[in-house]
Length: 441
Image (cartoon, rainbow, N blue to C red; front, side):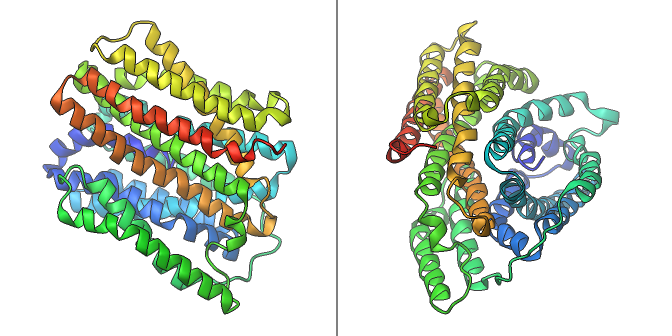
């Protein structure tokens, strides 16, 4: 539900502009305000779960998200909708990190791998389903409500989840006595905002000077965060991201591989959706349904990778990324002439989906394989932040490549130009796991 809300709104923006009589800048904030607050809060949300209880913070975040969704659906104007979207992102930032932590602490061994596989399938599918669901809901115009069901659909789902979570989620036997590390929260949040805000808003505003200055300040800001965390550790405090978590090769290599792959995936979905609707003139619903073979591939890969021998899992990840790169390149060659692609397109989308399915799920399992239970929340914060930041970076970078190429040529040629760096990113994901290939699961 939280990931769906990152993409479902994109399809509804034309209806929002008409219904709310709003400006393009306000629409940007409606779409991006959620992503900004969501991404900035994930690591802090993980620490809050460890301190106050994963179940309790999950329920708190879910309550905030559901109420904010209701406010979004009833918003009388753009200002209220922007504020409600930011609050919705806060709810998601509190809720989502607890999922990883609860999975890691509740399940062990093969059961944990199966649980993470199901979750990874949901993560990869949500981006696609958001576009389809958004198109269907807006086109249906239920009871003349236009775009509002895009948000209101979360309310019954949220209420059902609240009832189920209150009954089924385990209560924490032991809670972490570690403090929140306020200096770490402030410096990390500032660094993430310096990265996310210009990437989300930059293209629509034609990359003004402030976006360049913010991006130039990202590396120094993260450097300050590292120094602050070291100082907290020297004083005997509890750093927001302990050094021992980042010393796990599995976590670092897995997160790097996931970042490059998810950035390319999100950038491809954005660019190819633009091509289908603007270049080929397809409706939002039809464009969304075009991605169905990709969704099938993700589901198949996510639910079957464990059938391979455990000693082959790391090599499987590298091979699957290369398979995905081949699928991207095939789509680029197919689309360069501006034709719909025929039966070859769903076959290639299936290949890309299989590449995602055979990488995302095992990467989550691999990244957490050497993390101690005491560090579950901190590792969860890192692993929830990486894909979210990757999606923002992917849409900004690869989306800009597509839009710039489309301005100079045909939409099909722009797709071809975009999938080349996307495929290179998939190969970078494969290279990121090479240091782990000599080890066995």
